[in-house]
Amino acid sequence: MALPGGDSVKAGNEGNKGIRQQEQILKTIEEIKAAIEAAVPGAGVEIINNPSPSAQHSLLLSPATALDVARFLRDDAELAFDLLSNVTGVDWPDKEIAEKIKVKRSVKKLVEGIEQEVDEEVEEVRKRIEPGYLESVYHLYSIAKGRGPLVLRMRTTNRTDKVELPSFTFLWRSAEFQEREIFDLYGIVYTGHPDLRRLLMWEGFKDHPMRKDYVEPDDFEYEPTAHDEVLKRAEAHRQSLPTGQEGAAAV
Amino acid sequence: MDQELKIELGKQGVVVTTIEELYNWGRRSSVWPMNFGLACCAIEMIATTMARYDLARFGAEVFRPSPRQADLMIISGTVTKKMAPQVVRLYNQMGEPRYVIAMGACAISGGPFKQGYNVLKGIDRYIPVDVHIPGCPPRPEALLEAFMLLQKKIDAQSLTGPDRPRHLNADAIGEFPVPEPGAHDLEPSSNQGVWPCPVVIR
Image (tube, rainbow over all chains, first blue to last red; front, side, top):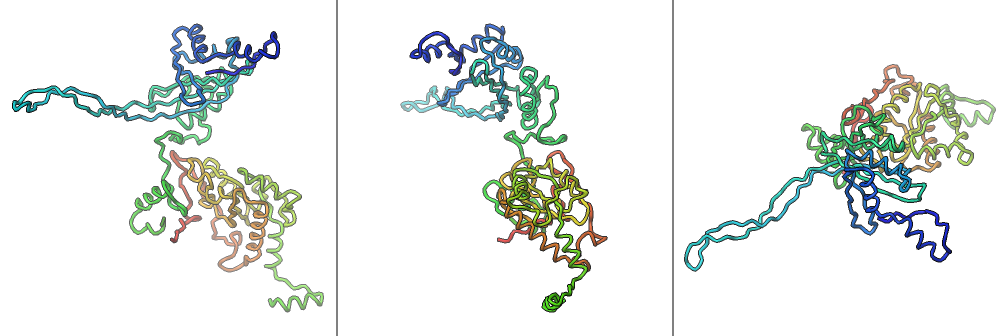
């Protein structure tokens, strides 16, 4: 990732100023990763490549060392990521992966009139379930250096009970409300957050509406212009009514 | 009373009216809305009160910040499920006679956010609405039109008989149940007494 920058270059004439500027401040994501690993031993940072033309690669932090890494990114004089502009959540549901594996089997076959055991390669489809997780994505900018965004990711262990991630609120105050919103809508629990309450939904609400498996309440009794998914839900609602009442909620 | 006779008497300098007419004229000429906006429709509502559209021509320029002093509630914008109990509670706190204008697509049906997890599918599920205005947002002219429609409705109310307004009917319900925020949705999800589920005819 090339981080365009605004480091001023004092020397040099107008002609090669641009090139020199680029040489000086071009910090790739690999360089940032190397800097992190030098400063935080055992950081466990991975680069996640973005194959699209934007090539906005990101760094995957491990939750155990994430706070140290984030503090380094903020306080390091060279990097100086002083602005956290955006925090968002991503829900990655459990994925079923079907793989074709070649398996050797001994098969009895008639070869030249005689029954023989012959090894044969057979393709077999095996299905396995890759467990899902919740992800929290941070966009960092450096106002001092004019760089950014640097994209950080953190992943929970699973989507059900181990959903804790460290909070960055004490490093960047702008994380406070956005982490509350993610807690509300995705159910990621930010440890160390000073005031982790629901932000948009009410206290006592049990679901996390932005998760992929969220089912909205069955209030499809009156859908005058239903189509597609809504039409299906409205039909299902009508079917669920006790007999004799279907007419009252015609769709 | 015969309209022609009334005009004839008027030419002779005699004004004839009924208590009902006088009473309703007074009521419809001083409908004070509540100072209360929910979303972008509120911007159009504010524009309606300003000099260009001038809601004051209809005697409704006095926006009251307290529900106790207001006669009209303009639901101007999206009603979220989190806001709906407060809207019903404010309506309950208004003194009779009171009226409701549901302004804009969101207030009447949920509008573009209808299938959202946090948006109520129309405020008429909990409180009685007198005038619905479609539009996203409705222009100030539409709000004026709705206001004139409401004035016509007030004018046509007779003070006695079975269709008399609620404030003259001791048996009429004055308080509407405030929905409770539940684990998955508001409970109940609609007030069947106010909103019997409409039948769609195809």
